[in-house]
Structures are given as structure tokens and as C-alpha cells.
Length: 264
Image (cartoon, rainbow, N blue to C red; front, side, top):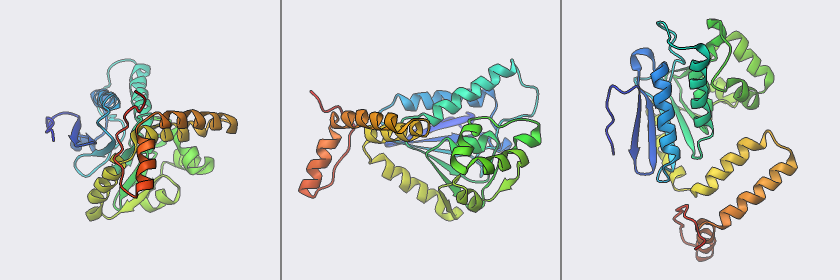
């Protein structure tokens, strides 16, 4: 287990097959500045290329998840460059070919909420709070919110959240399909750790392909979906995992998924 430098704006820690990314600006409720976006992007790219990472936890330090973009001070550079830096990070997170859990305590606001929605699962503490705060700052939603919200919550609810920028409780967010589980603060950490451990035992190639199929499927025709599913299954049969799972089923034993290529 590595111990990252405490002053880094985003920390990357490893424990076995589980990587934990921690947004680490607690004095700003983990609001993201230009350096934070860049470091988060670099960590996501590192994880993407590391086959030994099988599950990812994204969380925040100091009892908050993320208060969105840090709008204090005078930002440098052209606004388009700044937003593209944010957008490439959103793309890297949403399309990371590994299961990602957002562990949300405290505030998840603006880009911080959409960052959580880019993850596969959102596990929220019962004392968390959510808002698409952009309109109250004279801004429009970003970090993929205009893609994610209508698909997860429906168009009318997405408009309500975007136009009014109200705060939403974890239970209401769960009812809208924007939170997967709500846990008491005393239960949150163990629940997320157990979930990550379970995900880390699943077949990595199969999970990566299922993630891609599900995310692409909402934009495709039924015929396109079926064709992509067929190609994915062919790849699964070429790994060591599918034959091992079939044998374990026949033998009534447990299977150790490795994700290794099965064709020699």
C-alpha cells in the first residue's frame, strides 16, 4: 500500500487490485482548480493502462466529495482551454474500462455531482447533499451533466435540477436514479470497501465490455447493439476466464478470473 504526498491536490492509493482516488483540497471542500483537473486526468490514464487495477473508488478528503470547480481567484489561460481540460477528465472517467464507485460524503455540487454520475455506482452517506449549482453561478452544466442527467433521471427532472439548482437529499437523488445506495456514515466505508472487493474478483475483460456495451447501447439501434454484443462474446471466449468459469460451474468449484488471453 502506497502513501501519497499529503499536499497533492488529488491522491492515488493502491491496495491490491483496488485503486482509490481521493480529491484532496479539503480546505475548499475539494473544489477543483486547473492543477486538480490535470492530476486527476493523469491518475485516470495511469489506472486505465494498469491491468492489475480491477476496481476504483473515487472519493474526497475531509468529509466532502467535491464542491465543483474552484471559482475563487483569477483563473489563468483561455476559458475554452480550461473547459477542455475539464472535459477530457470527464471523458477519461466516464469511459474508464474498469468499474468505478463514487463514495460521496458531504457536498457533491456542480461538476462534483456530475463527476460522481460519471462513475458506475454512487454510494452516498445519508448526510450528503447534491446540487447542479451552475445556474446560481450564471453558468450552464458541464462535466457531462447534459448527457448524464436526462438519461439517468429523465428530461423533465434534469431540467428541474439544472434550472433551479436546488439542493437534493441522498434519498431523493436515489429515487431519481442518481444515487445507487444510501448508507449511514458509520456503514459507508465498509460497504464501499466490500463492493470494491467484490468487483475486483469479477472477470475484468467481461466487465469492461459490459460497461462499454451499456454506455454505448443508449445511443445505438437494436441491430447495432446485437452486433456489438456478438463481438464482445467472441472476445470473452478468447480469454481464459470463460472456459475457466464453465469448468468451475461443472465441477461446482470457485473460479479465479484473471482476464488473461486464452489463445496461445
